[in-house]
Length: 219
Image (cartoon, one colour):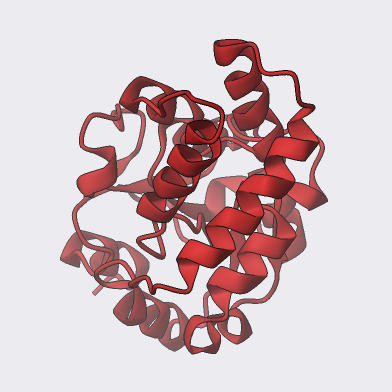
């Protein structure tokens, strides 16, 4: 990769924090209350997608009578309760944020999660203050894999999309980044071992991978 990076956009769940397991538990509780399982196949289908897509998929799969908004509200309540049990940062995140700040590369969060959930997750160690702004599912009309969220991120960072690096962990997020014309680095972790990340420009197992660092700060 030879593109000069002028801005960075971070997905949140499963990329910055190990919160995909929290989502999984919340979905298990939500569907379990209705007598249905949350399968790995369904999990892979909705990973990285905005709330409406996820809960409409639940409704379609199990012929549920509720509206997607009702399921979303209930799921958020469950998620936030489970979140209190604790969650970890993904490997290399502090080092990567330090490097971006050292290189004076502006950065933002661009997540498919709702504003309510995002605020709660980012509260850990006051990380929100380290980003120029946060884009959530409440701020866009077309969720990942549509390019809107990353085109919006590039515009608000005031950088051309081709000079934006996106950090992702889902196939929907990678597709959104590539449709926007951005460079994409994907994090391979336990929760996405079976997910196709091949569209990413780079696949790493830690955000502090030397290849990412050398790309952001060429010698």
